[in-house]
Length: 407
Image (cartoon, rainbow, N blue to C red; front, side, top):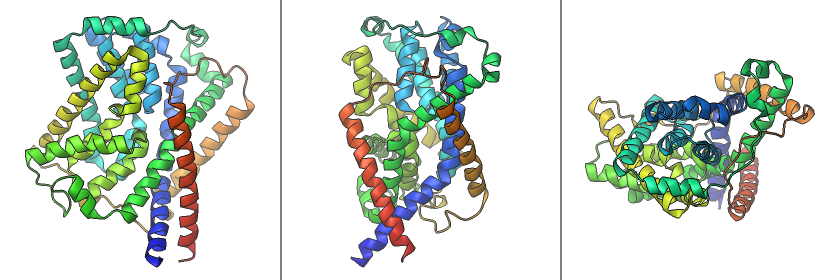
């Protein structure tokens, strides 16, 4: 019993420490994302992208890069761009860029995993887009794309913000109130995923033995970085399966990715795990609702094929230049999470900025409900279950932290 209580306390403390390490990065990332989504609207993006395929793919990638990292928001934005006339491949480029190339994700990865994974994330995001582009050019699914467009319902959209110059918007306090509202929406979209993700990371770190990971991922553990091709491929395939079982969004998955790498999973397997946020069932179902099941399954095929090829390419490219990261660089459990250092100072600064945005969102409500970016329709049952699981996580964390104080 004493051993369980000690592990509980350690799990809760690790989860809280993980979140404290990442808090300023979350706030900074979502502030940037909120500003971009208010000041650079989808209509402006579509107008800029044009019809030339090469240009539209490059601009779709760029607009995805400056967009939100939330998978559900990215799905809705990509659908909206496609509905307004963007090519299918540029919509896919936007979707992949907005979930793999965004600034906030890179910051979180750098905190938990190190620079090699940041490089892998951004280079890999570009490779994912390039491979999907090549596959679409080869397969050329014209009928599927045409049918997908007919499945999209026509919607009335508010373009009042598009009539204003972005410089005028930045000087307008009401526009910043809209940013505050969007910032609130960003947290509403991810709080459950982040809560569950960080809690699971702490639980796994404290309770799950290394032997489990060595069974799930062949030849992992013991500081091994010399994997055969088949072992690397198995890690890449199992990575998305693990992501499916713990589907909590890309941001919440990063501490779990750090945990997997610390337990000896290959670089390729961890990258595949991180890239897997768009090949899980909730995303498959949403795409089916938008475009139909045939197109949804085709998108799944595109993304999963690109994920496997990209993870393999990254692993062997890093290996060629002797840049594969060492699992020992990842510190899962650290007794000094809350010491006074740059993280402590940055958290205080960004908490103060966050508090101002909350004030602005609550007290500057004039005309800020219009033109908020659409989010993909989530399953009400799944969201309800996730909400109650998050509440259970809070109870678990509170109990564990109380135990930590008295041990």
